[in-house]
Length: 329
Length: 278
Image (cartoon, rainbow over all chains, first blue to last red):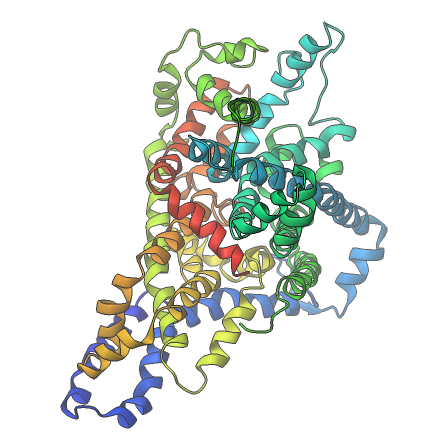
């Protein structure tokens, strides 16, 4: 439905172009027509966004107030806040959901500081003029282009539970034969750590690039002045580098926290086909998808979605607040 | 900054060691894809480049070559087609919207732009469930996989940020010469805006190529399945054939790696630029 409107808009634009040319400068007259062109130009994108973001988002709120099941012969019935009550207090349903919230919190609580610190370390290491520095930067950025589905599969092998798994066999050699086979993905104790490790591997390059751009905006004179004052490397890091990228750092941390609530792909793939411990790792989005897709319970899944969205909005608003001290744009 | 040769060597050493550890999983993927399946999962010797063959690649193509399993080149075709529609359609639609809303001045334009910034807050995950319900009748089609992702609030925002930094004088000159807003946009503004088109295209391509959540919900038919979803199906087979799975993985990541190798500058600028502006 949106696909044919650009063509219409184009045609309309052409048809409208000749007349104003007759009245040469024609400033005021043309300004008045500006809204027609502006609206036509933005119509396809606006229609798409309203149809596929705005409407479904509002609909999620509505659906969460109903008892709606996919493929059910019964018509949807108004449910009030029952779905939310169930999510948080019903013993059968709230267990998995609250666990998913907790898992997401744990994931975020580890990934945000660890990944940000790693990215900062890499960015500082890579922010220098060495030969082949571009090559190193691309190496660290490369996993970002890997689809998460593939990352999950590769790490499934690295973390394989047999003594032939990569990590197990490295530990076996390092411990001089004392390390046996460990089921990294299946054991409740290490399942989350495994998911965190592979997620950081894939994502850290992204944060690194952002921080690198921030580092490069710090004027070199500041570092030179600090050096003249005989500040050591660590002192320069604390008093020049860190204050210089404070804003970027906060942005990266909050961006990572939003992203860590959106985690789904790797968890889904590894639970479904990789023997990942479901209880210890399933996320809020995983809960939403299984509720909607496997149990056909659209109303319940919509309620999960709404809770998910509220968390993301709070994080995003925090981000805006911290990152933009200047009100301009 | 002045550096002694010793320092420089140390820098290289630290970087090389870190880079090596970091690259290991990718190395494992590429090496394993060329090794016989029973030697992929075999401890540290999985890293030894021995017995390299192209067998796995041939085997994947042979294994995915029937109506019940689907055809490998069909999965690849679906992924490429979806990426082409989402990226190219997105460039046209979103750049036009950004221009119409931020460079043409009319009543309501800034309110509509504010609405787009608001919609930028809504991650796809927040609308996946209602969209799944609304579009259930269109499951297993290509259109339902592509059309919802053409209009993109974040792309509009990126375009708008770039257009706003362009000098107004050039557009005004074009307008005085009698060019309407459409000609001004297509003949004057677009040629000046290659960097933003490149970085938006690359970011969109990257996201679309790896897209997984939506296909999981909407696609079950092998003939409409994009590559990442098929990889998740293929790796779930029992017993898993690791050589073939890794070969499949390499074929999945190769197109993005090629794009990355050629357009790296735009990748990095797109990512970094999106952040510096917040």
